[in-house]
Amino acid sequence: MNPQRRRCLALLVGVGGLAITVSRAAGAEVQRGRQLSFPRDHGAHTGSRIEWWYATGWVHAVGKDALIGFQVTFFRSRTGLAANTPGRFAARQMLFAHAAISDIAAQKHHHADRLARWSGDDVPGLRARASSSDTDVALNGWSLRRGRADTAGGEDGAIVDNGTYSTRITADAFTIELDLTPTQARLLQGEAGYSQKGPQPQQASHYYSQPQLQATGRISVRGGSGGKDGTTDVRGRAWIDHEWSDEVLPPLAVGWDWIGFNLDDGSALTAFQLRRADGSRLWAGGSFRAARGASGAATSPFAADAVRFVPGRLWRSPTSSAVYPVEWQIETPAGRFQLRSLMDHQELDSRGSTGTVYWEGLSELLDSSGRRIGLGYLEMTGYAGVLKL
View (cartoon, rainbow, N blue to C red):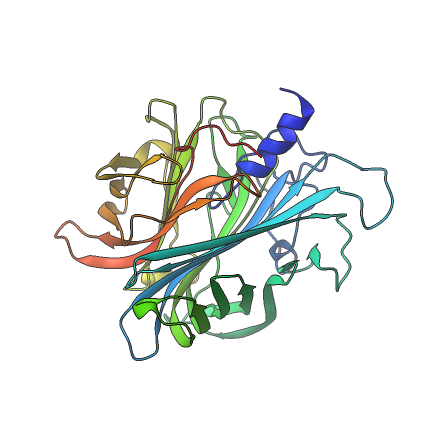
C-alpha cells in the first residue's frame, strides 16, 4: 500500500465508536494498563494516529413528542507529513467533522461536513484546532467544548465530576446549539479505558463514554415538520464517546456495526462487532452499566465471543446503493434485544468532501416482549464498498 493510500484510509475509516488506523504512531499513545487521567484525557492526543469526539442523542421540542436525532462528530488524524516543517500552516494533522439531523416526524435526514488542515499547535483562537488539555475542538465555526468541571450529585446519588459540554453547528439545512450535562460519571470502556478491537493487543484504542447526558438548547431545521422553518427549544438525552488509537485492525475486517443506547431506567448499553467480507463476526465487544452503577463500579465489559448481531430487515440506499440492515437482534450478556431504526434513510454520504459513506441513525431498543426500553444510535460502516477520498 503506497503512503498516499495509507493517509487516505487513516482519514476515511475512523468514524464513530470504533478505531481504525493504518500505521504505528510514534508516541505509542495507546497502552494496556495506562491509567486515564482527567481532564487531560478529555483533550487531544496528537501523537496517536486517529481520534474522535462523538456526540449523538435525541431531543424533542419542549411540550411536544416529535423526536429529532442529532449527531456531531469531530475527527483528528495525524498525517505523518511536515513533521519538521515549522509554522501553523504545516499539515501535520487533519481535522474533519460530520453533523446530522434526523427529523423523525418529517422523515427527513440532513447532514453536513467540514475539513481543514491543522499544524497541531495548541493555540487558542485558531479556526481549526483541538486543545490538548480538555475537550475544545473547533473547525471553521463548528465547535464542541467542555466547560468547567463541577462536583455534584448524579441522578442515582453518584458523584459526578464532569463539566457540561456545549456544541454549536451551523449548516445550510440546520443549526444545532446544545448543552450536554452529565448526570452520571464517565464510563471507561473495556479494561479501564483500554478497548481491544482485535485478537492482537496492539489492535486497541483508549475509549470512554459519557452516557445519559441531559441535552438542552435549540435546534433549527429548515423545511422541518410541516415544511416549516424556525428555531425550537428542545430537551432530551445524549451520549458522548471519545476514542483514540494507534494501530491497525485485523486485516480481514471490512467494517463494523456499533450501538450506544441510553436506556429509560438510566442504564447504558454499548455493543459492537467487526465484520468479515461475508458478514460473519471477526471481533466483538461492548459493555453494560446498570442504573445504580452510575459511579462506574458496576460496569460489565463483554467478552469478544459473547456479543452477536443478527441482521433483520434490509434497506437499500437510493444514493449509494449500499444495503444496510436497519433492524437487528442483538445478543449480549446483559440480555437479548431488538433494535429498529426510526427512519431508514440516515446514511451520510460525504464522497464529495471527506470521502466517507456510512449509516448513522437514531434507533429504538426493544426488550423480548417488544417494549421500547431505550433510544440511541446505530452506526454501520463498510456496506458501501471501498472508501475513497
